[in-house]
Amino acid sequence: MQQVRLTTTGNWINVDSGIRAQLIAEVNHITPTMTTEDMKDRHYDDQQVKYMLEDLCVRVDPDDNVLGPETKKNCHLIANIEQGLLHRAFSIFLFDAQHRLVLQQRSLEKITFPQHWTNTVCSHPLFNDQAETNGVDGVILAAQRKLSQELGIPSAQAPIEGFKYLTRIHYKAPTDDMWGEHEVDYILFTVIDSPSIEPNPNEVMNTKLVTEEEVKQMLRDAEEGRVKITPWFRLIVEHFLLDWWKQLKAQGLSGLEMDQVIHRL
Image 1 (cartoon, one colour):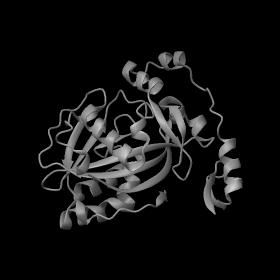
Image 2 (image 1 turned 90 degrees about the vertical axis):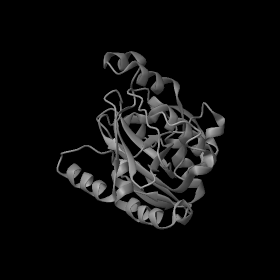
Image 3 (image 1 turned 180 degrees about the vertical axis):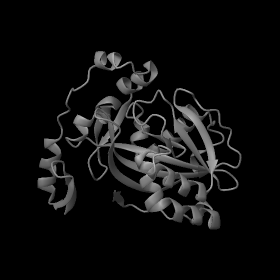
Image 4 (image 1 turned 45 degrees about the vertical axis):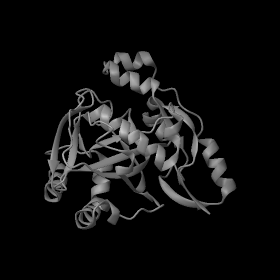
């Protein structure tokens, strides 16, 4: 038996493989709800529009099986998300030698969740590069690429073998009435003693190093509307991060256990 979300109710149910295939087929249609001209009319940042139109995300089913490519734009339109469109993503948590976590504040130019604080880097493996569709190995390649592109951290400082995959979460969250996220998100940890951070201003408006207590305070501040944080960061903090952080401080990356579960949050 497999689990599938019924989009009309938002609930997860157990179904056999035949019904599961039928449900997936029913959400295969992509709704063309926003054209390139529509995006221009909304005065979005040109570079971010280019990413939306040209980047091909990895479309997956609820079990994270690859279904094919889909534009970043289509993957993030609420109308398509409500029909079940799901894509693969990753969230990097980078720590320094004192086990402080690097956070970024997303730029004003971002189309989804602008000005929100979040983990070090959050992005997508791309179908444009077939190597990035290859499960955990592909996600780590994409993570190395995005650390450089968003934060200016060179690949030499973030070698492939320095990333630790922990688990996946499946979540859905709107950013406004047009855009949102519906992702199977791979969680990655890495440690760089003294990371050389040079943020790309089109992606990142601010960064900071924080302790566990400071992250807890950020969540309290977010509850009271004093700061904006991304929904996936909040979910990861509430369900996993603090325990993982303790293990990291005690035993390093080697002390962190991986699991094959997709956590439905």
